Image 1: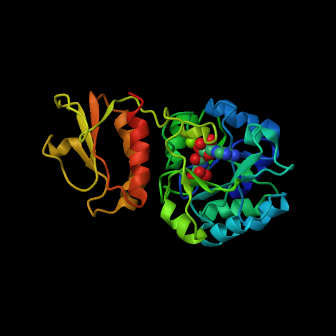
Image 2: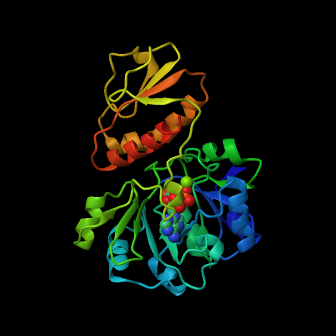
Length: 315
Ligand code: TXA
Ligand code: MG
């Protein structure tokens, strides 16, 4: 069921049930993070391997402090600038955080999402919400309530509808748990923005299939069609069942009616917000393959390329 009733969502959390919640990045599949039975349901519903830890969400950095999370200078600086917002911090875990959340690691990922309805909900709860993206494991993340309902309606009772996600790509993840700061996932907040805020260089861990960010394994964002980058390979012959995902201009390679422009106005943020919905739409069609172009490798364009690369590497 889809709706906008925050009190109903609250009731479900108190009964160890799951609720899908809107955020500015993607929809999350949420449970009371302190309720192990509820958190186990997240893994079950998503078919997510239990070695892949979860992000916990709340409405202010002080609340995380009240749950035992140590406030470092770096965390406070970044949170002051970017939270609420699309940045997730990996920090030392506290004893109050159950091991099921962190997959046994000694770190935990925390985030304050920038979405009015969800901030209101979080402010009314006396626990954080564990929430991975509300998609079956390895599929693209949902950016509307209907996307969640399409795939999980039989498995969860309620989807809190906060409209389409503004950003449309998952949060940037930065690891603050070690001496050196490391970037674990690209999102709307860029590496440069983090470096500028901290006034130090940070490391890039994006290429590794490391268990430190297990969800960054290559096999992710899988849709059923083959995605081919037009810049890099000899293209197979274009057919009527070919589609192209493009930034702002049509390609001469195929009819315009077979192409999707993500932003006619050349706005990378607009393109990012549409990408996952377009991948889902194309997935419903009977296609031979999809051609994608490389987006400008700047700001959120880099995160778009990252997600397209992962989707393409599944074929
Ligand atoms: O935008 C987002 O971050 C969304 C919304 C719902 O907040 N959530 C999201 O969660 O994308 P999920 O579970 O789909 O992706 C979280 C990523 C996974 O790759 C996971 O492995 C990584 O964060 N992660 C979680 N805890 C971690 C930790 N302690 N250390 C390193 N990586 C961690
Ligand atoms: Mg995910």
